[in-house]
Image 1: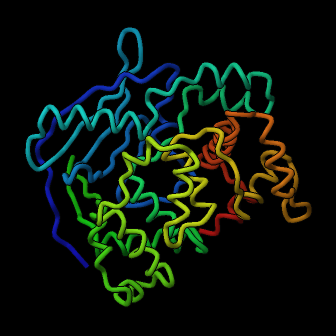
Image 2 (image 1 turned 60 degrees about the horizontal axis):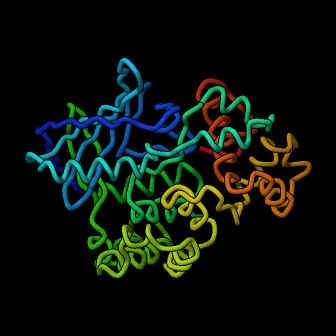
Length: 328
């Protein structure tokens, strides 16, 4: 296990003015995401590590109020001073990953009469979907989530950080940072299996190879059609329809992409969308998809709002049926 720590002592700042309306906490923190040691959240403040353009960064996002509109202050920590060009490109990448330029007015107008969405929108108006990492990092997370309890997924992610990642320190705090794809692309499968990741060892290596070789470029993939993106993702070893569905929504921002519902989500959806006990009467996936289709091009985003609402409720109250499904 690695124990050396890379200190990031150079601090620079940038300000992002998001589109309105904007809700920082529900955008920058997703309670449904399993906890990991590369990020931390408090009210109106998020810390995270980032490996981008070959440079390791420590980032802090904070909400700052101006006279007319909210702004996001991003504190950037690095080993060396970053060029203005790098910071400008980083700003655009952060806007993309956190959907800070997303126009929500049409969505709110189109679904304004939906009773299921009134409470979530009232509480979280300005919420955007997001994923803080790269496509490669998302795929790694998707693999460790496969056929595992939340607790086991957390443990697998941590052991990968400790053996292949880099520990960084900024703002007097330590966080783990992801590895370059080439690290796992050349890893020994048995070494990975020894870390108790099971059959996922081969998937972790295979999914790293096209990124390491340059055969798969996230920026190029962003500009391809939805069908082309899905086809590329499904061609990756160990990646199935469930993972593709999350990626198409979170990474490539297709708000209408909803073709697969996992058994775990099916149980939660049965409760929050149909108010039924999943143990007694599980609503079929076909019925769910038909129900969600009424929201048209916004169906994925509408589901996201209701989904986030129940997980934020869990932050403040005990929800027995949900705790039973999480099995921490």
